[in-house]
Image (cartoon, rainbow, N blue to C red; front, side, top):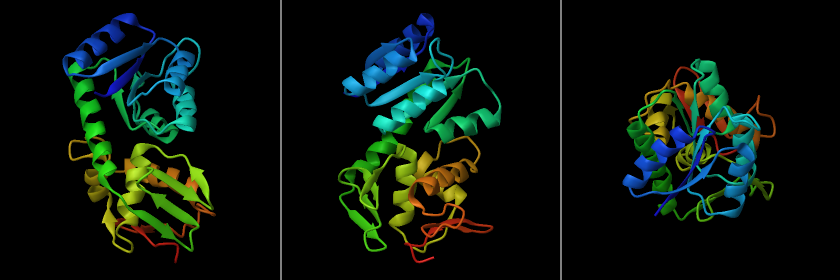
Length: 230
């Protein structure tokens, strides 16, 4: 049974979300501050985080960043901010999806299931991919990426995107193909979201993100994995 951490300082919202999650068979843990949320992730087995951006002690973006330092658990952000820039900023911080308030709690549950389903699909892989004489290693048994023998912290979607590309070196993927493979066919956001994920990955694995040798842009199409030969 999956455990979902619900982080929101409004008890009414937590109560509704928790009620719907429990009806669908999830275990739940609650937190009303960012510091409490981080402690739960550090000390307990959490499979998913639903995170409000407006918390009394710290910004939700800060909480997201702190969680990303210690865990790759999927994160769904809840916010009253409505601009596309806010969405992109949230994804850049490490969130896997973004839901605008007010929302239907049934959609929250649907998003949780969809993200977990996509994440679980990649647990079946048992490969260890190495590139450029071991400079970059993708160990799917451990769900971990290493650069120069040092672990690289990645969000679930960043990891999946890198794995999809790396398992098909030199193949050109369009943004729409990557959206379907990584974010799911039911993703209703902009396919340019993939660009932000690629930018994040390049910052983490490339020696020079502005001149990448692993994930290369295919102009007018999307991206391909060059295997470190570019």
